[in-house]
Image 1: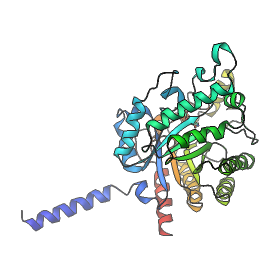
Image 2: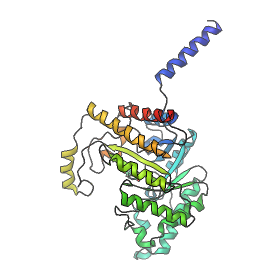
Image 3: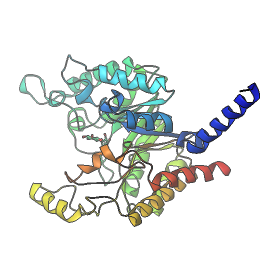
Image 4: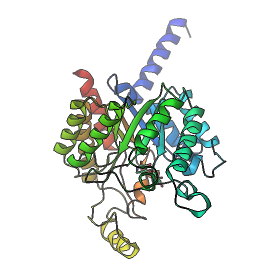
Length: 371
Ligand code: XIL
């Protein structure tokens, strides 16, 4: 074969590869928008190569689904479990991704010892603050310069906008949120810091979150963004509510981030979040409506829903969109809020094939680049 024919073959081959491999979401995203996924420990341990290949090809940001939560990384007072988190952070950096830490202070997935007072007494302010500070110093300090941004406080607000009554509030008082931000900033001054919550599309809660961020900034604390988890449904929340909430954050000069996006396609029951076991069983029977696969009409509906919410994310120039999981195989929504159902919330199906929703998101990103 002559040199020129070799070149022609190579060119044809790379054209074929390019044709077979459409651009990844991270390549389609406009400048300034990170696109990412929450990865679970099997994935960051390298035991789910299929999902991992999707992550490294499609995304430029990763969040750990569980392994930096207090119970995972700091299970006992004097014992940290950093190895799984180290592997996760290395994976992200090796692939040039922006690594987010989730989460420093939450009332869930936190071991009981954190909230237990000394000698069987009630937890007091000084002990609680010392534990919080020690935890944040150790965890943020370990990943200083490597984890680029932290969810500092998660879900501190109730639906009416008041502070949720948690053990943190009880022991420390209302300034526990600012203390967490203060400790995090001291441990890594260069890291971005976020407040994260759900249902920020509801006006009362959204306004409270905005006030909370403004209050922190008024005390000269660093806050880089407000994370809306966005565990949403196929119909709910209404697009107008999402539109308004993102606009309100922008108007308050706060960068909106979409931190845990997924789309529950199953019918919702207003009671499903607080239901007891027997009620849950009933709701499961009534709402587990696609046990054998998502019908094509629903695939299309899901795709349209993703296109619609992405149009709003792009309109308001959100800083990041992180999907809460990679493929439908491992979504937490199979077991939340009702255990044992089959859900279809993400862009890839259980076999790792792109769903119509993937195409819809890719199209939305392409359109935004043309503007
Ligand atoms: C969820 C994980 O996806 C599950 O694997 C785990 O069992 C429970 O927590 N809001 C959050 C996330 O901030 O940390 C939660 O993640 C989902 C709700």
